[in-house]
Image 1: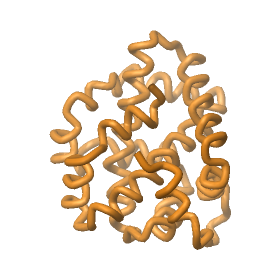
Image 2: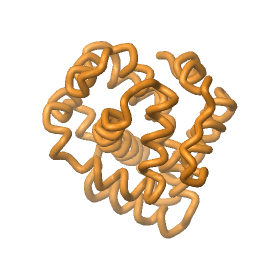
Image 3: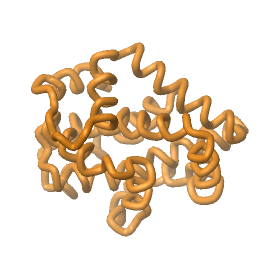
Length: 193
């Protein structure tokens, strides 16, 4: 099972409703935003893992703080997500592109930018938890973890090249805030569970 599939499995049905209630958004918009945010976060982690120093940092963070147990009680985590490590993870993974990513994701999915920021803060620890679970279950070292996220990113690019290209541009773009108008619809179709 891929990391994306593991996360989608954890974030189906009632969990989407729980997240949408916390955000104050409708479940359909929330679901589309989750479908877009997960591959975006995985892509951002993969980009970081391509840098040796950041790959080492990722492996240390996963070993120290993200063993995957967060996925055993996603609902419980979401009840207190605002107090979790999400904001710090996003600063590390997205760096100075965080606001651009939030605005781009908001425009692509129709979810308000503030709610998009809140959603990413909820999802980031779950993504790290999925990495931690994969690392533990597959007994991956630093190089194995980097290979895993890079491979997952390549699979996403192959399965939805247009969408992943658009998501990558969120991470690469200058702070011009421009996003293709049709990305939102493409995201919903490409990452539907």
